[in-house]
Length: 227
Image 1 (cartoon, rainbow, N blue to C red):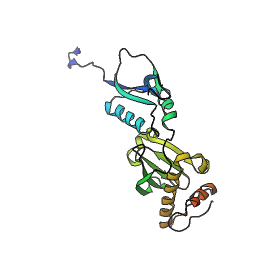
Image 2: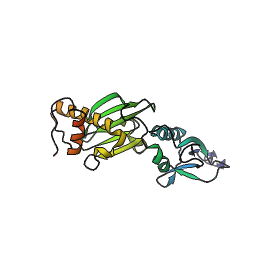
Image 3: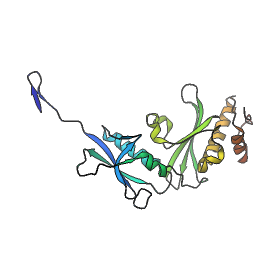
Image 4: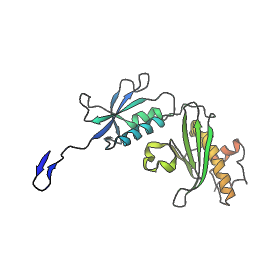
């Protein structure tokens, strides 16, 4: 504590900082690796423990298979006795983001259609993946789709943390979507029916139009063909 004539005693205690300690799971691809979590070339520090805990939850929720690559612990910085190692969120994500569920196990939970802002009209459908005990949200229009591990309306400020996959239909054919394809097709069918009900055009690239027709024409009036 310092002292001045004007204010008396001054608290010079530095603020508490938090970090995340990540350890590779014993049987996982990062077994034996551990360190403080880093992302985009920087080690992560948090001023609030709630923010660190939210980051841990987002890391856990984005694991789309039954074998998470790492476990996490919030620690106070500095952390005496710990080696000065780092482990990156990108290295963990390379394994955690690999889908490990049955493509047809999904169960639709909710659906919504509307303007996300700026005139962008989308359909959003949430799906439960029973084998993982997790819910994902698929958002799409006739240009592309995004898949996230959290409700879009509640996670805009953490978009990079919850985004699982993003695609442009003109760059990504259905065959490259993997186990996500049935959910993307189902969301497209819902969105197309809503567009038709509101008198709006819905044009897809030929490959995606064909992918929808493979599972049957979505409800509502027939969709328009490719541009």
